[in-house]
Image 1 (tube, rainbow, N blue to C red):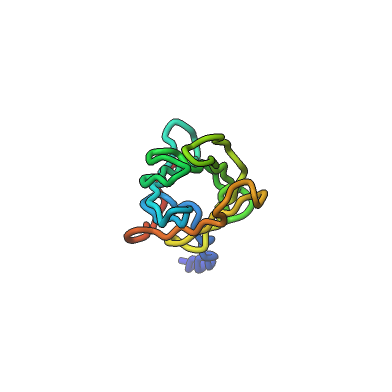
Image 2: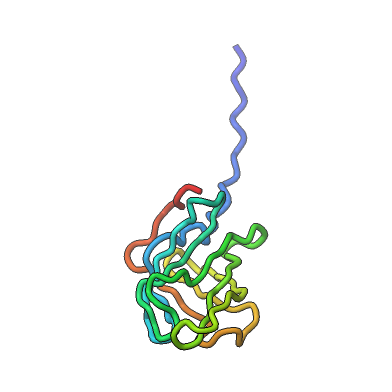
Length: 139
């Protein structure tokens, strides 16, 4: 009986896109901060649609307000294309501006405005509160 040939060596799986691990509790360096932010996935939309909600308010944005929404950049790992809310004192003149989330690892990322100067206080650094997940929440 002939011996079966050895199985070919499989390449390692591609590295996980760390931008898929943003769900959870964070501290952010928004003006008046650090401020607590909770990031989740919008269950009403398909795919990885992040929603970041401000737990602690500041002089411009009240607590409970969505501060940014974003989706994974399909072409660049570690990037989330987002829209950030900006407002003047007392939530006056609230407007959405384009931003990008640049994820360095599962516990740290920064948010930059596409057009610097659209809002004050940017870039904003986020640091995870608690242990980082090892797998993304399902879309």
